[in-house]
Amino acid sequence: MYFGQRFYGFASEAQLEPTVESEIFAALKKTRLLIGERKEAHYSRCGRTDKGVSAFGQVIALYLRSKYMDTSDDKITVHMPSDNISDEKEIDYVRVLNRALPKDIRVIGLAV
Image 1 (cartoon, one colour):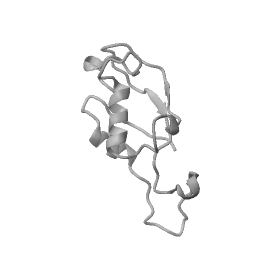
Image 2: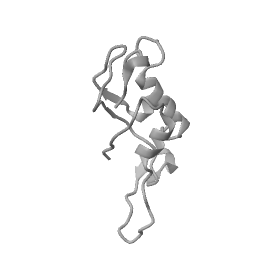
Image 3: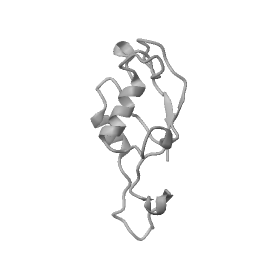
Image 4: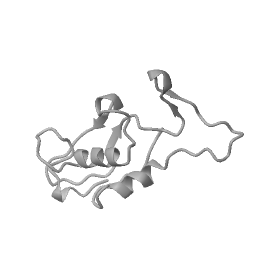
């Protein structure tokens, strides 16, 4: 969800700043949730908006760092937590990102 009054739309295509997308990637870098560069994250977005437009329910998809990720051997392998270990909890992506994002952009949900 975002209030678009101060943004040049969602997508960072016209090289005008700020965009919602540029703010999201700045937050992802700041929180170190990105795995490598943007291309390596397999980022995709569903739709975009024009300058000054607000949106609710904008969807993006990308790979993020995980507590269950193993990057040894130059491959990314995800190990899901076992039922026997109760203290293994995944990163609270919504909370972490919302702390790093400007107040006019909010992450409201996540699907893994």
